[in-house]
Amino acid sequence: MKRFSVNALLLCTLTALPLHSNAETVMADKALHEARSLVKTYGSNLKAALKPAIKNGGPVNAINVCNLEARPIADTLSAKSDWKVSRTSLKVRNADNTPDQWELMTLLQFEQRKAAGEDVKTMEHSELITQNGQSVYRYMKPIPTAGLCLKCHGTELGNEVSAKLDELYPYDQAVGFSEGDIRGAFSLKKIK
Ligand code: HEC
Image (tube, rainbow, N blue to C red; front, top):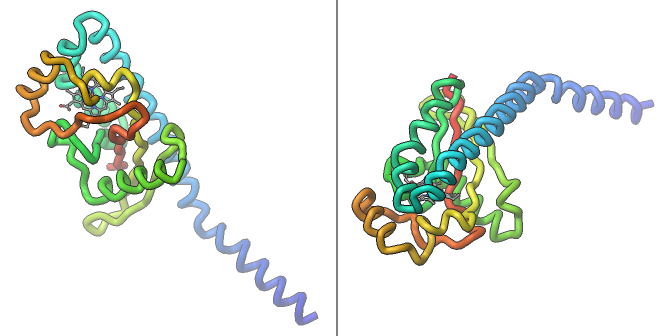
């Protein structure tokens, strides 16, 4: 009899716990869903801008697309949503994309997870953090380096590409990548 009541008590405790956090879980699920969908849109909008630019005018011409359009595409998505949408990396080309503390830790974790054999394509990280006394929902997803990226982020860049990048980004760190490397990550912060 005693045994039964202990079990019953345990059962109550176990069922009571998830009830408490249920609302939070639902909120986090919704945020995660939104973040994933925004990243998908941002990624495909970037590719849609980059691919024809390379095809029509070569990589030198396409540098202008990345230089002028990458941020406005992110800003448009941010304006239309409750999120701040951006990209960052351990080796940035544009210093405006420099990671903050949380992004830096997450990027380092992605590298560790990749080294441990995890597939970069399905990797992501979301977390509710406290920032300046407020709870902020954050999300990051690594961006793998594809063959297409090497023209501007690889080890052997064309002379014209190098010259143009030097001109626009004298402190460029975003070279020397190989296919499959983590080039950087999409980073989203829920602001509303
Ligand atoms: C035509 C040249 C070009 C190609 C090809 C290119 N990029 Fe970039 N990339 C740039 C430029 C220029 C920037 C800086 C954009 C800015 O000023 O915000 C950049 C910035 C980035 C950033 C933001 C972080 C940073 O370094 O500032 C990421 C992430 C990135 N590129 C990933 C990729 C990936 C992944 C591919 C392949 C799918 C790719 N790029 C292909 C030129 C290129």
